Amino acid sequence: MELYFAPYACSMAVRIVADAAGVELTYREVDLYARRFADGEGDYPTANPRGQVPLLLLDDRDTLVEVSAIVQYLAAKKPEGDLMGASDRERYKVLEGLSFAATEVHKRLLFVLGAQGSPTEARTYARQSAPAVFAHVARAVDGRPFYAGESFTVADAYFAWAFIVARTFRLDLTPVEPYAERLAALPSVARALEIETPLAHASWRRQRGLIGEAPWLR
Image 1: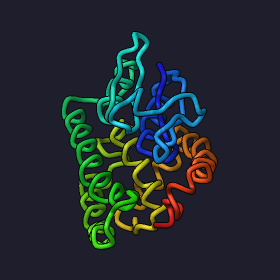
Image 2 (image 1 turned 120 degrees about the horizontal axis):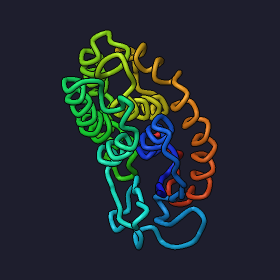
Image 3 (image 1 turned 180 degrees about the vertical axis):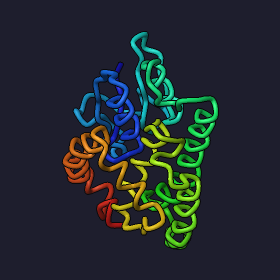
Image 4 (image 1 turned 120 degrees about the vertical axis):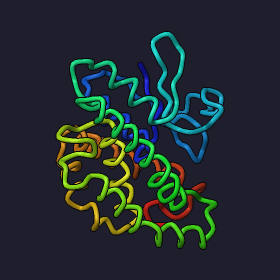
């Protein structure tokens, strides 16, 4: 299977889950602003009309998109694990976490701050909303090691990526700092960060004429 990704985009959550699940993927980098593959071989919208990442190209050439769907698909590749929770109750907590990460943290905050066309007022509102959003995450975790319980799940992978990007946008993570630090210390998260940080800087340099100010400085 092949993952179309962009460094520091939400596709990092898929990389984290693949690592944790022991699922081997090949990776093909996308320059999202230039709308092309980083290797120069083809326009990205031709392969994915949505023009977004992640996209998982399956062995039969079918595709999956959307973080929440892809991470659950990969988690199912490790049936003896508990990446979707250790019980029925935890599984529903995992689904809750995926939904909150996608809608409240990703789209409400991080997408607005990272998008080129976001008005100043929208970015201001996102920054002002961030403390309350992260406080909701902290209350949901409620002192547990991970979102759904005692074990790392795909919901934690999504939050791990979100916290990494939130730091690049200089958002205050005080309400979730202990949780964020636990996630950052996980080997799968640390490896993803080590791989994608230099790729993110190189990607910005390639696309600087289209992006302007570095996304992490907006």
